[in-house]
Image (tube, rainbow, N blue to C red; front, side, top):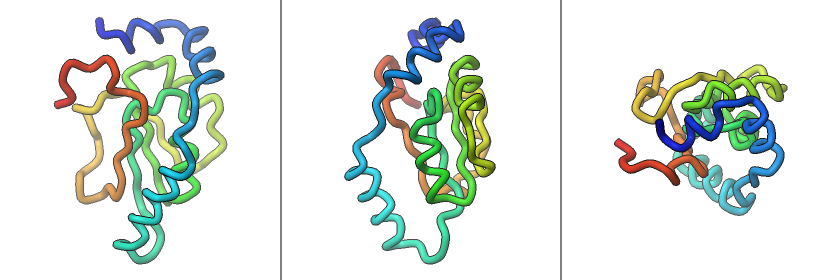
Length: 123
């Protein structure tokens, strides 16, 4: 069992993680959105947040995109994200980076913040 799956086996650990996980620096996220808007006219349609954990970054994306999908390999992390979700345009799913349920041409942004630290291979 890899580290992420074993660490977040319990709801308690997922809740503690959500309390102390830091958000990505605003200057970085603003630059990403600026870059996207330079090449895309109109509203941003769909983003995917791989390794979304408790949904902190996913929620930020929901303010900029019509639809956001947050994925994590931990069922407890997804449950924690759903518990705190106040956005109707977010769908949370259990799964990993190799199990993306969305066609490539439907996504305008894929993020992976703080989720590959224990991976031997991404693909």
